[in-house]
Amino acid sequence: MSALPRTADIVIIGAGAIGSSTAYHLGRRGVRDVVVLERETIGSGSTSKAAGGIRVQFSTRVEIEFSLRGMAFWKRFEDEMGVPCDFRQEGYLFVITREEDLARYRKNVALQQGMGCDVRIIAPDDARAIVPGLIVDDVLAAVWGPMDGYASPNDVVQAYAARARDRGVRFFEETPVTGIELDGRRVRAVTTPAGTIQTRLVVNAAGPQAPLVGKMVGLDLPVDPRRRHIFVTDTFDEVKHPMPLVTDTGSGFYCRSEQGAILMSPGDIGAHTEYEASVDWSALEPTVEKAMKRLPVLEHAQVRHAWAGVRPLTPDGRGILDRAPGIEGLYLAIGFCGHGFQHSPVAGEMVAGELTTGCASLDLTDLRLGRFA
Ligand SMILES: Cc1cc2nc3c(=O)[nH]c(=O)nc-3n(C[C@H](O)[C@H](O)[C@H](O)COP(=O)(O)OP(=O)(O)OC[C@H]3O[C@@H](n4cnc5c(N)ncnc54)[C@H](O)[C@@H]3O)c2cc1C
Image (cartoon, rainbow, N blue to C red; front, side):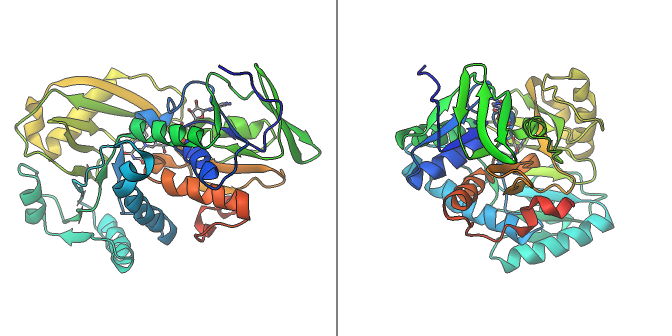
């Protein structure tokens, strides 16, 4: 590996989906002197743990814009990036059992439809026609999004990094940032065990660890780490494949086809926040309980393997794209919760736009840090 440079125009902390996409978009804009510092390996953080889910179903205009622009990107991914990313539009089905959820979904669906998304509220029996065997006795309605689907997070993040490198961006793995030096309230350098890089512009894209990077300059950032589990079964042919991503909104359980097997998650279990990303096998029991309640045939599926990862959660479930308050030269691209993979193409585009031209091409008001003030 080449030695760390002594200076850089822009240093990005973190080579997950958000940091690597930002690097790619800066490279596309002709910004050459960009360095990405990654404490482990490219994509090894939350990004490699994501289920790859991609949906247009969001509750704010800006997030739906991110999804729609993202959809166009996933469709042209191979042409633009030179490698495939296994994008599949197999749909998202949200199953709704509570009146208050239905009211919220109706409002969101109206917004999504108004912006051109193919999203429909359907009757319980229609949901069961899409997913045979689905229990709908207690279901009020479902929301069907046939545009939605998934792609491979690892293929995507590696492609961002490869195409960024083609444009001169340098990535340094196993290089943790241990400090950010300031001149007064202005960024002067970042420090690592391998040396110091003088720079005037730093992007905090450290995912769940973003608050730890914030603390380096005395910032308290509203991002909490929360572990989530995924379980994958053996090949299972007792469901109709491809099965869309089915979310039981009452329990948080979700599942979908994964190459002839079933990928499933219990959703959030336990309340405390943590950086721990190892598998806690006691999470399997509530997963199976939730699965049986909604799709009993899953009782016959054998869980083959599991993984867990940490999601960077914010209090309102939306990401943060903003300049750090009171610290000149520090940009925050953090807190993308459970949708940072799918919104990474546009998040990176927005950050690169703001850093190079001073403004983004979308109205980012709803993603600014000031909303928590
Ligand atoms: C189980 C699970 C399922 C998910 N499913 C989906 C899904 O279906 N769809 C979806 O869109 N999203 C999903 N997500 C969320 C998604 O994974 C995250 O929102 C996204 O990966 C965040 O990307 P990031 O680049 O911000 O963070 P990360 O991928 O965590 O990248 C941050 C990087 O910063 C590095 N870093 C941290 N501190 C430092 C430091 N001091 N110096 C240098 N480097 C540092 C880390 O090592 C890491 O590689 C899921 C997450 C989990 C855990």
